[in-house]
Image 1 (cartoon, rainbow, N blue to C red):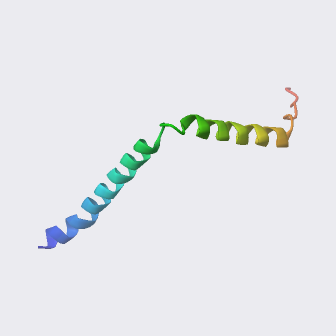
Image 2 (image 1 turned 120 degrees about the horizontal axis):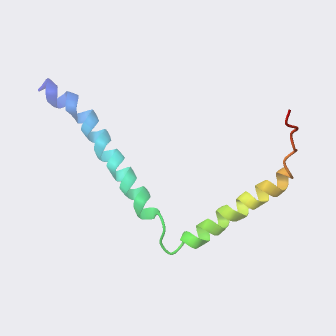
Length: 60
């Protein structure tokens, strides 16, 4: 019976990991994909505007 108690945690973790990956794949895309992409693009644009232009480095 020791082998059963030794196998339970890895089997549980494998099932939980598989469920996590399936959930992540199913939540990608769909009707809200363009809305999510637009939100990310807006956040990146705001971040790059806040930083300003990158300083130019001199090459030796």
